[in-house]
Image (cartoon, rainbow, N blue to C red; front, side, top):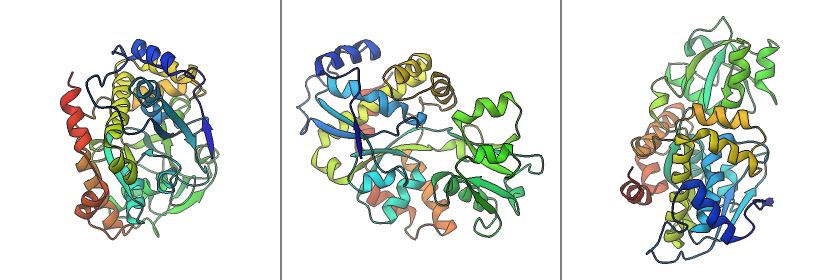
Length: 336
């Protein structure tokens, strides 16, 4: 486990001033509220990447200004999905797809999904032999690893159109599915936002499905924030501050993506301004108010139940693994 202290925010006072300037809010947005029950929170960080975690990365200064003066950005074991960091007590909050949160709940981990943040992280890119998801039958599809989130999402997409993802698709594992696609070793793969520029500029393949624009996937969040049940129950005031900081940061990502992208690079969270910017431009961060977080969990839980990935019903998943009371309060408080 590695803990990374933001190099520009060693002092809480400096952080407060910085957040006030960046977000154009008073240094303590929770004026009049009781002090948080704890001043410490551990947030995930994937060194050198995870552009879709932008609002989590930008939330640190707001949190320091809001009374959580000990904000730690923690990287866990990168050989496993970051939901394992939350489930294993390495982090207190996690950014991930609803499918991965649901799978963690099904395994018995005590977590609570709190809110959706954005969607639009992926495009299914294919060669000329494929014109629809149904055409993936018998084809070679590149993934980082079986049971990682791109494989899970593609399996749900395949099942949705009547394919058996376990038998109808030849899954090819590799460190770089995009390079495998370029080299002709796979027929399709799920491209992440940081790969869009190269694929589009060089006209490499064509898009079959984008979860930013194509239904039903574009109707639901692909990145949601979850917290440890223990932290959420023990520290509700702190939990609300964490979620508020993330959602305010999401608003900044939507309203001023160029500034947000530059801040992410300047603070050392991301290595590439261009990759950060295209991710913010491709992933709508302004829909957390009007998209239905509960419905996103329900949709993915139903798809996973149909595919045989989970046994629990959507109702059980929602009852045991979600807590939207903080989101409901913040929707009222953060009206624009």
